[in-house]
Amino acid sequence: MKKAIAGKPPSEEYQRFEKLAKALIAVPKSEIDKRQAEYERMRKARKKKRAA
Image 1 (cartoon, rainbow, N blue to C red):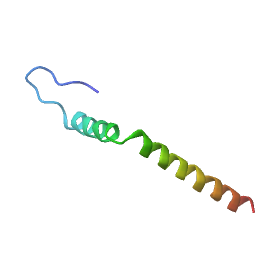
Image 2: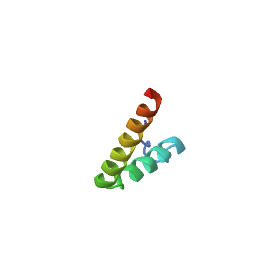
Image 3: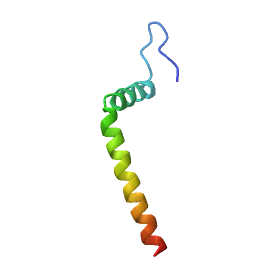
């Protein structure tokens, strides 16, 4: 992604990227870990269900 050239505002694409990056950084690591553990449990349950 290109940064804004002096005097020229950043592109809309770059602004959307920055907004996404700031939203991701704002999430606490504990919340990410909690959701990952939940995802892994669901994945294992789905795998068991398919194997049965």
